[in-house]
Image 1 (cartoon, rainbow, N blue to C red):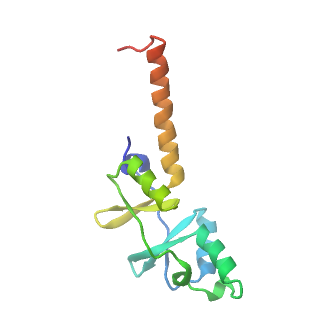
Image 2: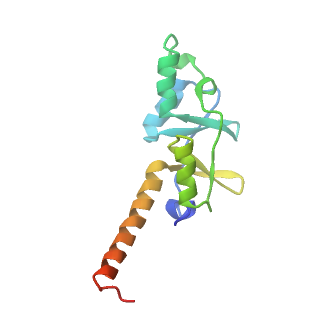
Length: 147
């Protein structure tokens, strides 16, 4: 099974962040501008949480009496930052994402966030592996396997 590093490739995936004191309106604008589903919330340069599309919906329903310009990201972000490491196996990462019901996982290397891994990245890699395995098994069964 592949590792996080292999899925991300040499270039990695860009990660977007927002300051904890910015507004939900600012966060929504960043999500839309960069066409992403999650932002790492930072206090200075230190990551302190995540702000996702799900947080927008929660904010909209639970704080309906307030405008997004009046709500700080720190009020609605997920403060429990769950991470992956570049050498983690995809099976492990998949389990973590499913268990915690999350779709975005910051990736850490040398104590720094270097990328954002999405459930889409994980599923795409696993489907690719399964297609290759399926192909080899069909060749083996039909006696086309070179081995």
